[in-house]
Length: 410
Length: 187
Image (cartoon, rainbow over all chains, first blue to last red; front, top):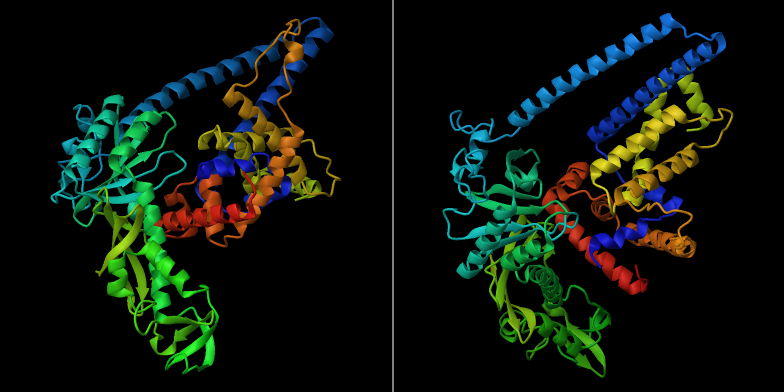
């Protein structure tokens, strides 16, 4: 079941549930104003209609009572109705002209003469080059023009938005594999083929979604943002009308195991945190007095998330390659003086091994990179005493399981 | 707001009464309409339906101004009825049949009270689990998956970075699914 379908359970929600849902802030002040304005106009219109209905009813009653219509009143009323009708026609024509004019001018684009400020983009769209690969379509935040698929680096970044309009999943990819890039271009070409028209616009949003966009019949939006000096392409699926087959094709071309890799990266970063904390003895509660009979500095563990040394070993082997464990975390259980040892079914910790440990991951999104069939990298950010730092994990497929095989502190 | 409050406000200034009523109940009406239409309507349709509901309440509301109870009940009924009508229009699920048609007796009533009741109970359970995620995760999850807001909109409303919203949302959903799995109830 998709994440969104899960929430279908609210379809026939009871009163209490609806009340709680309504407590979640969702409408902006602008949206509230818009809805209120519309409701007020409708109410006013209804009021006028009802008033008119009452007048007509009165006239009918007068006619029936006297046998002749109240000619003067009817004449005035008809004139009033005709005036209203004429005013409506004028308004409609005016509105049509305004809408057409606005429609033309509201296509924000690139005015080459004014040095890249927003202006009419008709010259861009009418040229027939409004494809995702159109040269003129991308204006970098530095005022220079960029080709969306032609960054100066050989690394192209595809920030891919998910498979359903209300279930967006952003994946930030650096793709270097030429074959994969060819498949992406082929899929993007397919999108270009089905679109009818396009609009170049400016995304007013903030944060990492800010930038120029190219939308195609409101079906697909290519967001082009600048990451440093690199143009970054985001593809948004925002409409139900996109053939699922095409979405599948594109997703398959861009990231065959994208979701899996992201999920694995999340699992492994968490595992790295757990194992690093294990190495530093951060999570074990132990007796204050040590037991020299077990070894100098070893104390009996009284509370711990792991029940035995073999459990720790198994957890590490599930998440890290043997070479990596030996290089970085060999001391946890596998040396002459391990951090954890066992005697008579009880676990002991080397109190001398205690140190600050663990990774306090920030909410910054991972960057998945160097994607290959049997390996990929995930860069994650963590908090340090001085601020934040990044670590790049090398992840490999080891006998069918993704495991950490190395790391670099960036 | 009680009917007598509303009535008293109306006497002072109808516009002020409308605005007060709207401010107090717009989130509630929006939630009611979203719950009924989220599977079939665009956001514009939902907004349209909400504005229709308030227009109806402003103009047709024959309220007993002696009634001291909260108007929420009345507004809820109007909102649900209007939302269901909109749902029918949008999904075009109202076939017209002749009473002379032989198949009429075989047309089943599609509403299943027992199932609806189960679903309502599930909704309450799900909300409880979502709330257990804590803030701001529960708000993010509801805004995203119930109200269909995107990360940028949620970020603006909560004063957060869109990237943080996406990460928190993904992690919150993962936790929610674990909670649901642990509790072994199916949705």
